Image (tube, rainbow, N blue to C red):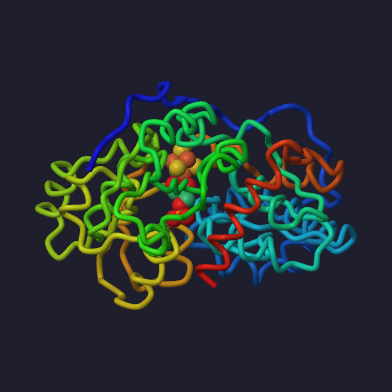
Length: 355
Ligand code: 13P
Ligand code: SF4
């Protein structure tokens, strides 16, 4: 497998959630609200403390009411925190599942509880809907690692090789590529092109993992996810020694030494399905930290050993931000008219292939 020249360094945004003045929720915490929301709390009480609930509950009730008034849906990625994931999301999933929901929904407004490239993908697939993201700064180190000019340079350097881009890129980058993929369908997409050599950008680790699953020659780029690249195989092996019987499952954005020690590798949705299906007594999800809390709600019998790497971009999204988004219909995500048709073609080609 070949790796193309280094991209601009990954952006390492170390961000806290927005703290500016917010619109107060419609409801205040009260004994009546506590009783009304007791059933919902019961479901999440293992992952949301009794101290946090009086803060979240008024926002949750306000958001759920406002969604109906606006004919809006919240699409939440698996990395959202549990109060978002379990209490206000209408659809939950990995990048592919959320893209499919965006294409299907009848709602007039989509609030993307995820990062900017996910909101752009929703807009590409649902051009007539209003797509909102609660915080425009929710980026991604992979999306920041490559530009449209870089893609044009790769096309020149490898004439005739089709270009597959991970959805974790801007619409402008997608517009330069033949088809998109997600971690859930990357191998299938690469093989669908019937080419001996395929360029797979921008994540060097996802590309290496794809290379390990296919005979197609994979050329890649030097991008990396700032969350997953921090894990090491050595640290995971030590944890397994400390916790006999521990199952380790990893996201394909992890480096190869991590994948080598993992019992299973797959997209966030595939990791969740693996845990629900196998029910290991002890498991470690080698991915963003919030996912373990979200799955724990559904499989209380499984003990999660949590390596806590947070994605600073995903963590920009909060209940306050979602509420604000619905109150003021902000921040609207649009796609540059110069790239929209070509970017949509690349995403639709993937959606049609995997459906
Ligand atoms: P999934 O498509 O597996 O959810 O991955 C998206 C992502 O950003 C992982 O870091
Ligand atoms: Fe991007 Fe990594 Fe965050 Fe996913 S976890 S959004 S790939 S930086």
